[in-house]
Image (cartoon, rainbow, N blue to C red):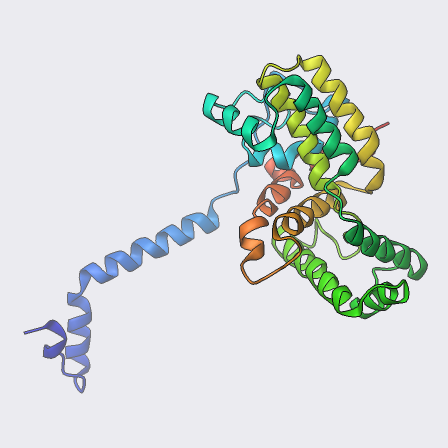
Length: 291
């Protein structure tokens, strides 16, 4: 007879006896609870830089611009310009994915990222309107204010609503996951350029691994990427938010659904690590403005 059939639901002793007999269930429950407690109590992993390269000078600050893309690959420690973790198969995949079979195409790829920055004119226009409105108001514009400004500038109201909802929705998810102490309420997306700029820095290091350049040339390229791109942002948090939102918008083509962030916004955890001092995150110690 099945165990549950022997339980007298009117007899507390019978019920307790049956529960006690199901020891295997309690073992499974106990293991699950233990795992949850361990994960909850275990300190988050620290960011590990390479001991061969600096972590606190100008060169470290410049390569840190590519942190999110470098660790997402992953191609090695964030401060290592040689991308030492790339395997032969990963190098082959990078060549195919990025269309960089030789040095010339590699340099052209970096140029496209730095100059084109994966921009879409409509998105750039709407974000510029938001930035200008914020300067006039002295605060982040509300959704209705931003939409009204886009329409006033000649934009379609329906398209404006969709774009504003997409940007603000992803912003909210990043702020919630990374933390309001990092992505403070006054930090908002004014440009999506960070995604391409972070990729450009990473691509510069991958060129060293692919044999297209030596470290000094890669460093020079990374410096130029910083000089051209960094003035468009005010802080590491500003840059990180732009990178994550830019990545989500790029790969979703601006169509944000329930699962979109889960698919394309996974870089938020690296963003949080980079900006957390206790985890040895470089963005938490390196100044945004380079002297």
